[in-house]
Image (cartoon, rainbow, N blue to C red; front, side):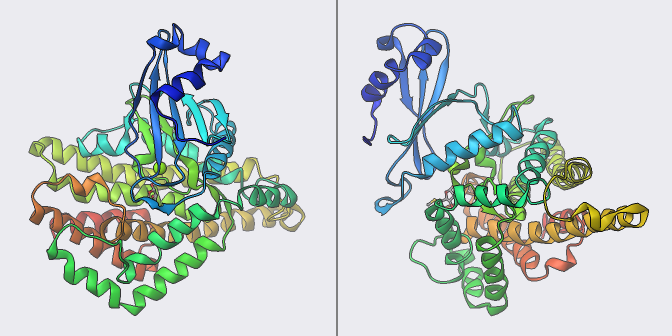
Amino acid sequence: QYRILRDTDLRDYLAKLPAVATKLGGWPTDWSISEVGDGNLNLVFIVKGAERGIAVKQALPYVRLVGESWPLPLSRSHYEHLALVHQARLAPGLVPAVLHHNEALALIAMELLEPHIIMRKGLVAGLRYPRFVDDITTFLARTLFFSSDLAVPAARKKEGIAAFSGNHALCKITEDLIFTEPYFPAEQNRWTSPWLDATAASFREDLDLHVAVSRLKLKFMASPEALIHGDLHTGSIMVTETETKVIDPEFAFYGPMGFDLGAIIANLIMSYLASPGHERSAGERRSFEAWVLDTIEAVWTEFSRKFVELWRTEAHGDAYPAPLFAGEAGAARLEAERQAYLDRLFQDTVAFAAAKIIRRILGLAHNIDFELIEDPKLRAVCEARSLHLARMMMLDTPSFRTIGAVTQAVRELRDW
Ligand code: SR1
Ligand code: MG
């Protein structure tokens, strides 16, 4: 039966799980337990025993950020577990290993990621992550491709859609917070300085923008292309210099691939445009910002290279039936179509990235990239540049035909 676990309950609970208790080692009374969750939704405990530590995540029946006035189904833990298992199979080593799951308690015990830190925190500190591009593009290419109609037969794909279709409350959060609320005077919207009032008002009055974001919302709601992570910002990634782990897939459902790709690109763009607000030497700043721009470009180029390679070699799905592309001419036409597919996916990525940036500045849930900038005027400048770019990316998506066009625009805005 569900109950919110406190330290003592958790200790008693884990002590009764032989596999977990043995892993932790020593006497349960000696285990140290601390609640460290700083996300918007859940409790996260770190439990350390004589042998090793584990992480335990428990879903609360409400949104932690807001409180009990905003109930949220515990079933998200079921979908998170399902997604973690699926991702572990498709992208081995890139998600935390699940040690135990209790559906009734909405609890997942996982390997403790140590000494990993949340990537967003590392980026705010100006750190660079040499493994990130290879790991995140492997994660994206494999999880997206292998859950798509390119890779799996139609019946299996539809079973996958059905398995995640109950996660609609989490989808609704995205539909409201990302695609709706920043564009009207919703009560929970906030921004951190009066210098953004005029921009926020212009976003609320801009019907072109409302059409563009509504098209995106529809795409998010009605494009079950692949099993997406659904909340793939830099706070959902833990890193060291040598490892990358994607965490927190509780928003997972079958949606548009560009939503995950856009999340990564958006968060890197925000990291870059927030950089002038953070204390670092001129040299460190230059090399950090150059690394972020290179990373943005490499995320797209490496992802598309890996995705197309999977399509060439592992296409066992019912889309693009082989008999329709027989012979040399068919093969050449299919290869051109792969490029056309990626071009469309890139357009979705750019537009979703724009929506992700706007929600972090004008909506309910913000990020520390901007929030930790102490000087309010400088923070507003960084946020205004980001909003300006995001508006262009959403309204004039086709003018961003390549990732180079995106990084060029980002670079030009750096000193705008
Ligand atoms: C009320 S939840 C706010 C946000 O936190 C999660 O990380 C998602 O990004 C969600 O939109
Ligand atoms: Mg999360």
